Image (cartoon, rainbow, N blue to C red; front, side, top):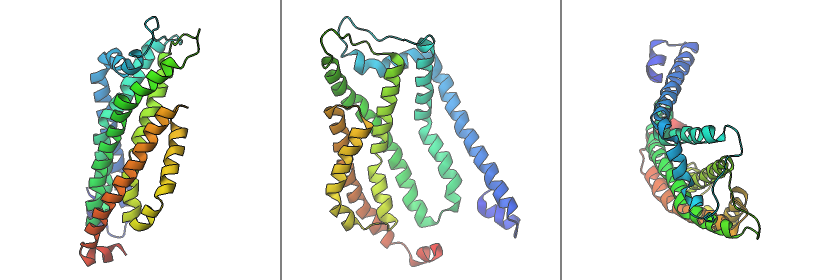
Length: 261
């Protein structure tokens, strides 16, 4: 039952629409959670292989005599399964976001749907792009630098749990940083700031990008720069795309904007 049908079938009732919303929300969350566990069940048998794949960038730059170690008693078993569960959530993200979209879409106006759906799809692709950029570009450079930066007499033997935490932090940082175009489009489309005013703030954005790179990445210049530069370029992309979105809004029928008032 949609939100509109619930209101029509129970006029004057406030509790029934709220109850129907909660029931639908529970249903959407259950579907998303079930899908995550189905994907996790399919991947669980390959937990070690998945971890080996994620560990490839650091293993490739370890000294010949070094290997990764597990300092925790249960780490050899739990760490790959933790990574597999996170990978299941990562792969299920389109379904999770679709369930969220299906829940909120009936309450949006037509012009809001026209803006929200492309941004949702674009956001998913950007997040995956940020993770891929971190894995294929950032990790090889960072680990090549860190493996040669150890003082003489210090053996480089990374712990598998610490490495996983490090990898997930970088993945999240780059996936989040790659949402800059979405944030730029939203603030312009919402009228919070004009595109021209935002363009004038470019120098502040560049400084902020390097500060964010410093806060979200390890204390080395390579990873900080590799995060700051994409943030700046994605900001420029957001400025460009916001022009198309604002032009599209200007062409919307006048009555759609009056409905929002």
